[in-house]
Amino acid sequence: MTSVALLRQITDYANRADPYPLYAELRKTPVVRDEDGPYLVSTYWEIHHLLHDPRVSSDIRNLNPEAAAMTPAQGEDPNLPPTFLKLDPPEHDRLRRLTMRPFGPPHTPRRVYEMRGELGEIVSGLIDGFQGKQQIDLVDDFSYPFPVSVICRLLGIPREDEPRFHAWADTLAASIDPVRGSAEDQEAQLQTVRQARADLAAYLAGLIEERSRSPRDDMLSAMATGHGPDGQMSPVEMVSTAALLLIAGHETTVNLITNGMLTLLRNPDVLQRLRDDPDLAVPLVEELLRFEPPVQLLPQKTTLADIDIAGTTIPKGASLWLVLASGNRDPQRFLDPDRFIPDRPDNQHLGFSSGVHNCFGAPLARLEAQFALTELVRRLDNPRLVQDPPPYRQNAVLRGPRHLGITFDGLK
Ligand code: HEM
Image (cartoon, rainbow, N blue to C red; front, side, top):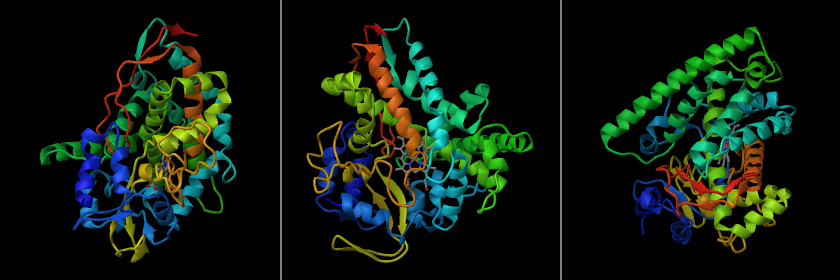
């Protein structure tokens, strides 16, 4: 099978509910390419190797024209400079360090740890809202509002502006998907994305300006007023970094929580174990990130030199698709990879990627999912799935159910 045929199958909605047999097929040829398509890399060690190779660039300015055309909504934006997600060292490192600073000393997510109380409050408030109902849509009633509220609190967005953030986050997260319809649909999508981006940027610029004049105890104020060995971010860098934090942590966390409940409801013995032992949430969330990763693949990396890997030479300037979700099911790396083992030992999954671009928000995302799942199983009495498999959203990269109907007998 050619990589283009596989690529089409990956993005084909018919495979969304269960793409894993396709990935197993893909792994038979760890690095595969068709005439003018990207190189697909599907095995754990090869993906890991490339994520740590400085000859693999994340800078969108290095994308070849075919790759850039596949995700136009992600291209250059005259209003915002590329975020550090789309930059290589040393620019990447400088901006990432500057963003890390408000969280506390390097690699110490102090601010995230301090947010535990607030996370608990948001989770309890959302679950209290289920009172009197016997059925919910977990996505709309819980998984969606939760991470946006958290990132808004972290950044310091006023509560009354949160609904606008939800709308921007939805539009921009959807634009990450390389699947596209007719030319007209594409143009319309691009227009909507541009508008959302411009509105969000204008809103953030105003708020950053205000916080630089009268700082508060929040991340935007810290970014606007902080000075350190790396100097300070420029105002546009601040805007694009704040937008990155919103977008990168939105759909991803929604899907982790929703995939999490779906997996627990499919495995009632594991659900009961979590109820009996909330500490299980820590390894269980790691296993979820391996078993049902919200980011299935990374489609926008480019080689800066010829790279020999798994018997193939990927030439300089080639576009790479690193299929993280396939690496996570690689039997060469994980024992019994298609089984969900909540306390799996040695679980160095690729759910948060690896190397210099490993997920910046991982400590927050972990904590959010741990809180959410523990509280949901504790408080929902006898929860059951309405439909299995549930309806999935179109997005093949950020994969997850669009709705997850759950019925239950009451609230604890
Ligand atoms: C990067 C996954 C939540 C902020 C990444 C990458 C992955 C990922 C796979 C690497 C992207 C690449 O190399 O192209 C996830 C998952 C999440 C999650 C699965 C939730 C379950 C969050 C949250 C935030 C966040 C909550 C913000 C608070 C970022 C940022 C980067 C990133 C800023 C860029 C890091 C860099 O380029 O150095 N994430 N993420 N993520 N993530 Fe997350």
